[in-house]
Image (cartoon, rainbow, N blue to C red; front, top):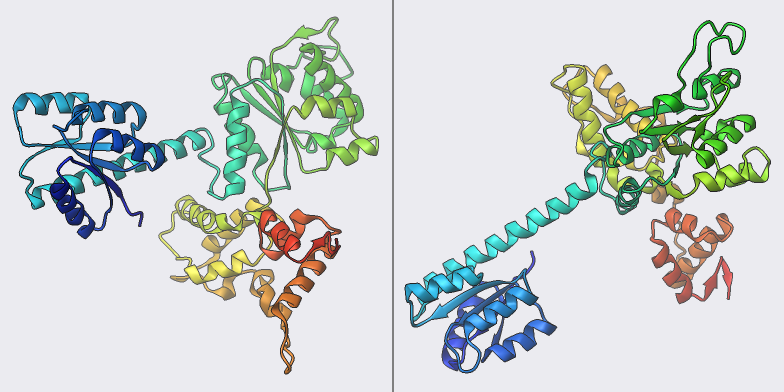
Length: 458
């Protein structure tokens, strides 16, 4: 637990010392100052949680110090002490911003009580501020479960993008939650009261995709017996989410490019384009750069879409979120299927965290629902898990190190592991760090320690 810091300010050395000892006995870290000027110097170099100061001191008074603290250190709580406990001074101190007021001679029990209440008040303020920060990040993204650094970074970037009308390109493997991010961006944008229209470009046959996107007029082609509004027009003044845009045919990519450039809708069979106001968010599980180099995706459209790129981490890269995801999906599945049980024992989480989840969050969600639906006991056991999870060994078990009788150099072993991990991934430090369960920064530190570069000596 964090040790609270207190600055005691009093020109009476003996009283200053007695107060310090009393507060240190309560477990606080206490610093002292003989006047307001010294207190200001201490606060500028070492901020304090709480200041307990005499009201009447030579030079600058405790009220003067209080005013300066309120201006320069608004998070610091101030308690005033005085031998002149008049109503007027108490009212003035509270008006300026003192938390409380103690009269001299100071009763030790009263001092402990006031300081304890002040520290509790400070803790509540910090918790409220932390909650406000979390809600500020989460607002619009509440359905995205997890608090890993990788996920929070994505949400913060999506929040910044939501405040603009910029085109967003979301990258991520299947099942990572691309549509949820797109929905969050729309909900946090100025267009939130307007439609969010979604189209999966890979789920509609190419010959129907143009009409589905742009609509058509009556008689535009054989079978067009009436006019149809496309997804682009339906999203007017709102947001159009084009999922799996990497699967879109090249001829339609040109039309999307014109839509982005000219803000005009070219409806099939219409004599003239229609002005349109729509924000586009696109997503793909493919490598668009590779598709561009292969001639399967327009380079000019790639740059138009890639204004704000957001890369969603795979579930294997944020395994710290698995317990929270399991609990979330478990409770939701129980409610969905009107079941009171079974329970998921915490010891089964190790099976889930050792698995790499190629289907990502969607695969985990489906597994949890399956366990809830099929289980008829009070508790899920390891035998209820799919075989792929049951047989999953921890990496250390699979490694089965055989230590030589004559001993081994741990540093040489670490160096060899680093070399092999870097070689396995062609020198890619990010992938090697993930493989070893390290941050990239830690990997680079250890590479420098052994004078390694991309798996070879520097």
